[in-house]
Image 1 (tube, rainbow, N blue to C red):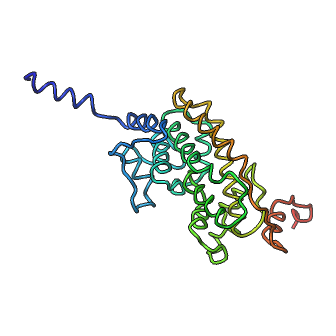
Image 2 (spheres, one colour):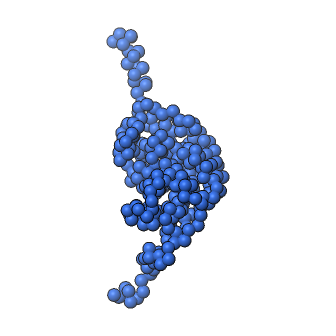
Image 3 (tube, rainbow, N blue to C red):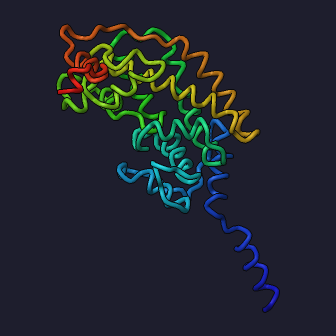
Length: 273
């Protein structure tokens, strides 16, 4: 083979990127507060139902929101930090667990992306939130930043009337709001009603994500950890200032009564029956 043919072939071989090369590149870009995205990564446009899957495919793998790998985590990082549609990532507990415990460039990219989005918005919410507009703005940002966030927050942030929403999507009845309220730092699943019940669920999820980032910092690559630690410090200081207007549950809260009944131990007569 002639030398002038060999050189271009070698150059192409050296420049061909593997999926993990792309994941590492995304991680490196997310160390910056202004990441520059590789043009080969698939943007989502209007195809939100397949957003994370499309991104993972463009990286070079498949998206799995049950047992995620490095490519899946990197896809979530892109969906959060570039598309700002964190609600499209599946269920939050999978990603919170990954942020807490997983190691590798994809997990690092996701932690950096979530921390970046939280850092970008936290200062404007670092105060007492006691009017509807501020509660809606906060829920909008939670839906954009926390992977798998409840879509009820997104809807309320966009102006949905809690009383006009389908029951399964409303803050008073949505299972995802109920779950978030029951988190360690939440006020409990029977808390409140209406718009500020949704905001309380969103704040509990936000605090859980911050706790996951703190724990996950120990599993983060040293160079990425520097950027992550800086962002965590910013989020932590501002989050302490976020307080929500307290709202009471409605009188005769049947949902609360049902929860108490479902969690109460069976008596001997119940078991016999």
